[in-house]
Image (cartoon, rainbow, N blue to C red):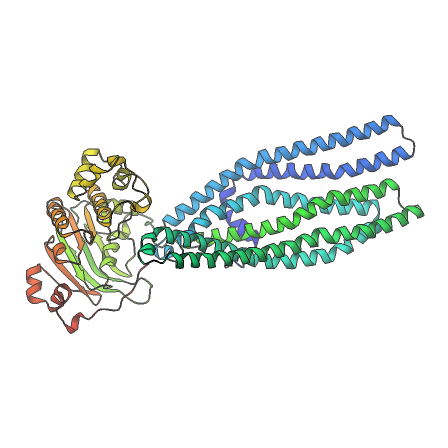
Length: 591
């Protein structure tokens, strides 16, 4: 069942397992709220007794006794309200924290294809805003909805008990209010989901503009970005105005219509007093009950809206949890194999979308300690081969083995301790240089850290204001592209992996820096099995052998000199020589 069609009760059952530890206190807080409401309803009955008793000559002593009872009921109601708040806030915030941790853990374990479907703004709004909105409803909205509903039902029952004629008038007059309210509630639910989705899109627009501010400035597109943001902000405003309109309808339905009923109740009540069927105290009690019910009726419309927003927030939260984890650990994992890092691709096929194959029956062996350069046209699947080794993606057929063990038989954590990756597009975090480089080896010493930085020719770190402790800003935007690449390369080197995957890691470096890094890498990579996804001759020079990927298959392997002499496809890819067999393959974009 899709989240949009799932009932609120069904959605709540989905999160029940995560809320078991806080349910007892939630139940106690709800009980305190109900008791407070019942004490509030008892006050009109005490007033009826005081008025009727005083009019019949009950005396001053009984009058003061009645006043004391009303005061005690009011104090008891206030104490229970305070108890409810103190009881519910703690478990509610704990549940909010647990749900956020649950969602973050689930997101970090989802396949890359799922992350491609949602913008960062959407994920942020669901993790922060939606969880907070659901928690506020659970702590305040749920208890208040129950209390107000009980107050209204109990109030109607008391009115019927005091005088069934006036009670019937009240009930019949409330039917149109309920019908109008429920109609507006359905429309509000649709607008609520739209508003929350639009808020996520708006956050994504801000995120993209901030991350791409250099590009926007370079092409003079700041005004266009502002226009796009303004358009999305205006759409969200119009949706919020629509929500406000439906809330106004609900408020009128549950407050305006009952107020109109008071005139009918007054007329009928005075008639019954004149005929002796109702006492003055009884009429006072009925009108006091309607006054007590007025607040809950007014708040009920607000809580209808809050409940719809909470359901939408919960559905958006569950929508992410409903995505299956595409790559899981084996039920009975194999131990980490002994060996020096031999990598074998055995008739491996792969497709990003499950339909159009990108790789077909790839056979490739990378011997222990060997550096193999993989070359191919853009979109041929070079990066996919590199990402199959650490199981970022799963092979559709065949097997990838490290030292004789299928990577699917290893725990992902163990596998990724064996394999390190340096991407062409480096990803750095808003943290210190030290935290970024030691991400895969937090136990590394400063000596080992500086060694990795020197191999990657990242000596510029010494010139930063705080050295290793310099914070590099959001995604490392305070650094140049080449500096970010070198830090990313140092991070992979520091892990001292058995298998190293380098996805064109030197593309942003100038010729002289690339040559310096290449010399150091050639020494450092001795003994490390390395797959080098290469796009330039200078990178290919690092390799012991070269494999040519074309048409989804490995069509040739050998040294650079051998392939340059004997492979027309290789010459076409590397030197740009025209060759019919080397026409670009259809590009399949991975997410």
